[in-house]
Image (cartoon, rainbow, N blue to C red):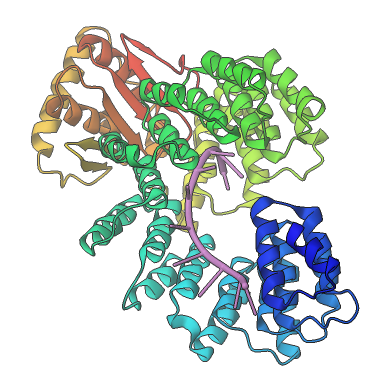
Length: 586
DNA sequence: CTAGGGTTAG
């Protein structure tokens, strides 16, 4: 900057290149005011800046996050070229101003400027929906720019964000040569859309193609392990993490993997070792502890988070409320809910209300739960009603339950879970005819409950147990073992939950005795056969655990002196010594 | 002078 002043002193004009070098310096140093000074120099009289130089200035303001100033400068540009337009579009995309980004693309086309690969890779990120995406994709193909790796990875990414994995896959498959980022995009696409299997397969393909994983790759791989609850594979990835030191995002993904795989010891250890923790690290631990049934610890971590000066966000508070509702801490929950706006400036959203309905409902305060729903500033959605419905089932409030179920069916008429809960409610109050009616309606509408599935990882291989599918190689042996355990447990006082209509509907079974062979029971027995005694048996399942399996597992864990962890879609059950971390409250 | 990939919930 001294150079600039001295040149001015000698009545010399800097040329474009000098100016752009100066601007680079300002950017590197974060010197906003000096950058503005250069800007004024560029436009002082006698000097006609070329488009190229104004673009450099534009970019500078964008990098300094001064969109307004960039916009002003842009509006006054006499000759806008493709770079000028693209710089603005990229800025809008980054700021998540989707409308503006798209609007500028249209203005650019009207102005007769042809977009290039830079333009497309930027504007794709701002694509607000599938309809626009299809149009964009068509223009890209027409322009021939779809062969550019940047455009491709952007396409893969945005298709995946809209859940269009097939299209993402197609684009990936058409590629002759993919670079690391493109591999990361496609692996991420599957990992982020709960297709962990495919993500891991692609990861192997990437390694076979000769690419070395980087931090983004491993984050995606961890996420795939998280989704599949592959603790052993996740540990393997952990070993490779050392190369990347303290990458915060990667560390956060690691934390989450350990939490979601039900290994809080590992999660706590990793958390303690982190040099830097952000709101996501803390939230991950709060949520992880809460979901695993360690509500008190979750609230303790939340306390430490506040002390450490990290401000909780929307998601943190969901974890806090979840902890309260699953531990029956009604007063704490109320307190956090009421104070989140005042203390942290977070407006409670539908999901927070959902937690509160759950909290009150589980605690049997159904009237208060209804009052809260009526008081919401949102229209109650199906999730809220389903929460209430669940509480009605637990507390055997048939009338309110039926009311809630009707609300859900209005909003979401084909949800199998609702019919199941409704018929369970009727069954609970011995209204068999009504229960049967619900079943018939389901049949007529062709609504089927997904079959119960449980998965267990043994020697880094995933074994699946699916209701009504006995294709597992050792099935005969497993059933034999299971029956032995059942009869031994019966000798110790185990009585299978004979309320089989309830179970029957919950798991989509036909046979009365199939309750005894729910998929998690099979997976647990297989785990006991395959893993040494000191190893924890970890099961992941797609449906919530039923009452009978819960009792069975508690007793089995005690009788065989085993640690068993079952992860259902909502939370975790740690069985040890005849008890479960959920406190029989789920 | 301008562009693509990774973390908490749902």
